[in-house]
Length: 124
Ligand SMILES: [Zn+2]
Image 1 (cartoon, helix red, strand yellow):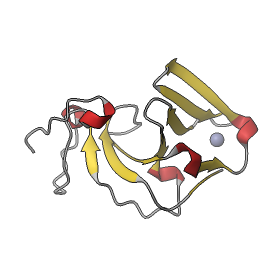
Image 2: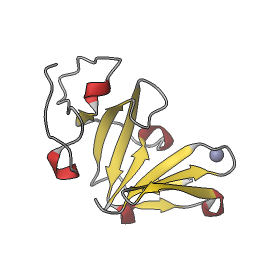
Image 3: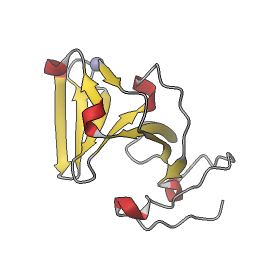
Image 4: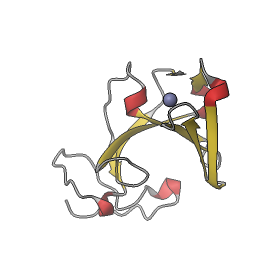
């Protein structure tokens, strides 16, 4: 079980990238605001690069959250925070979209410049 404080987050939609569907809602948090309150023994880590430590559930294999130590951010899928009223701020990795969304939100081709991306907004 994971709890997060209810402030200091930015919420996103991402297209396909590490997602299990055409669109995946996620939230970014300062790492010390994401607390595992139960079941910490059942969390595994997948460690492909130093940039992303993907945490998963050893019981069901489900994705839980991803630590980004270099960005000092923790990425939590919105779906596993039932108490969260999801209010996304932007889309990332939109160049891969298979489900165009007309929602008026900014759409990053990859990720914002602050996160090492191009910062380019494709035409919607
Ligand atoms: Zn599980």
